[in-house]
Length: 290
Ligand SMILES: C[S@@+](CC[C@H](N)C(=O)[O-])C[C@H]1O[C@@H](n2cnc3c(N)ncnc32)[C@H](O)[C@@H]1O
Image (cartoon, rainbow, N blue to C red; front, side, top):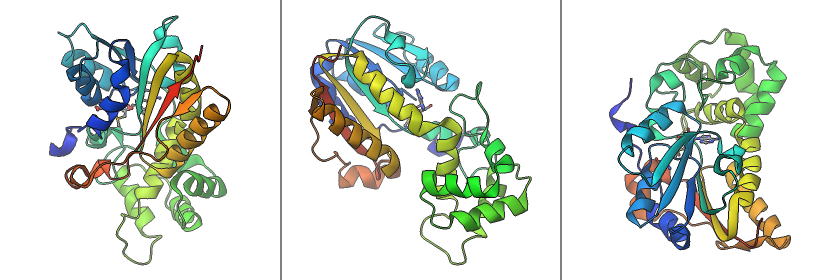
């Protein structure tokens, strides 16, 4: 089941294309191709070859259909953290990572990413592998759950939320979890009370921060000399890892950070695409990274 809002609009497409413009004549890896919005923007700008990677088999099926008549695009099911392996011995002129969840995944109730839609507590990007979020929700000791909520959700009321969750087990569905979490918040707030809990569970279920660290290193190894890595992050935990990694690489002489400050969406994009509001794009240019 999907809702009307399931069409995914790529975030900062123009800035992303500008960042990767020098790479258009070489192999570009779209490491989180999703619904192919950025892939299409890069093709429209003249990209000659794109490896469109996604960990979600549904997304790869979608990409295969969308680009079936376009020989420039090769969709594959893989994790970007496996880079450089998916490109073999070839080097890439550019790698794009647009992190997080797509609108289609959020709008598909059975995937369990949204606290607004009734669904199972799954939250896996690759629903054929790993352990669903229900396992963490129903099995983790209270103290570990509180730590997870604090570290991955930056949830200030982590202990109260963990206590409520443990007292309400078993919790079977997304909306049941959202109701349980809401009870840990005495006053109404602007942000839905379950926002941070769902972010934390999704990060833990998919081990997103470790995947990002490994994926950044792999992406750099995949780049040719002068190749570019562009990363769009959606929350401070991811953005901090990207910023610190790029800074460390520059200090080690591995290349240059091209974005002293992250690129943010302009006001009109933030207004018409709410998902873009927290986005930050950072770009690194590799120096002989073989
Ligand atoms: C924000 S969406 C990308 C949207 C895409 N740029 C577009 O314009 O349609 C993020 C995508 O990353 C995928 N993803 C998450 N973790 C991944 C991983 N480790 N490797 C590859 N893809 C991953 C998700 O399945 C999702 O489709």
